[in-house]
Length: 470
Image (cartoon, rainbow, N blue to C red):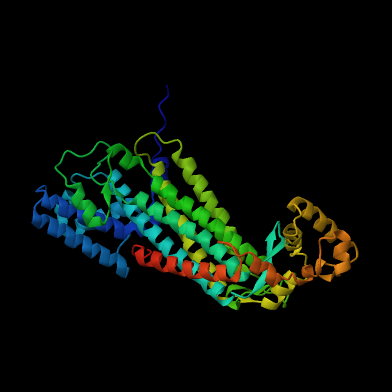
């Protein structure tokens, strides 16, 4: 075998490539609070257990506090050559307190350290997501409160179906976001397990007190298996998955606002701060924010696919692939939070054309189901009533009419069961007739709105403090 020719320049380029390829500092530096907090708790535990002296622990904690302050005020000297946030903090700690800094990593591996920091961050991200979801829900409730009497067509297949109250429509979106809040709460619970003390994969040969560290950092429990603790990133999958579903719900809302803001619908006028003009067409009012929420949903779906695909091939325990999964967590949060803020702003600044909405309901055949139900009340099976009204609507359409334009004679020609009462059917009577739990009848919607307000208030009261976003 011919030995490879030595090329110092190529070797240098290779070393530079290796450094650039593995560095994660540009995205994981946002975890500085979590890294400092985890190290402080670990240092205090080491002192409590007699593994290091209280004096050494005090120096280490003081140095870590100073590092956090330097990062906060922007004076910290970031070194990309040190690869990530963890090594940057450790290197600076050596500069501040000297060799005693080397004792901090006793009974700790980068593997359980990174897992701990990431879990702390995921808990905060889930809390921030819940707070943002709650704000969007509040905007929906404000709209519902303002439009308890606003009538519009409800749609299936984007075709007018039955009349509903706009408040009922807004509460439908509220319920979707309610489920999202539950998913983020579940994601937070999944992250709320301390892995520190698991070491590289097998545990540590020191008398550590993991429960003490868990209490210091606010974890509700400790991991039960050291190998699983350093390999597990299910909590990231849960957060990214919850983000993808939440963005899907926001996209559906955004799509409605885009459609409703067209001249063809003219149901809503979006706020100027959430729209833009055209570079060439002066009359345009483009729904940019709604369109971007819709578009960024696809990116979030891609993040979930990437996370699942990355995790599926990893043997136990730690693999460098997990570094990439961490970035997906950050990206999901960076898309989700501004999108929720945009959705809330879109709703709060929207002006609904209530007259146009009502006309759209009244000038269509959205009462066809109620006409069929009228026959059912006379004793006709619903399927037969459905056929009669379907044929009646078609005949009316061929004459350029709607059901509301027909005379009593027209109705009686279709069925002798019709009498003068059929002419009293209106969008208001149709809405009032849906007087069931979950229905669009005014008293049901008012009750649902009051209950939703109470639920949201309780959720906000019981939610953990989300912490600052870094």
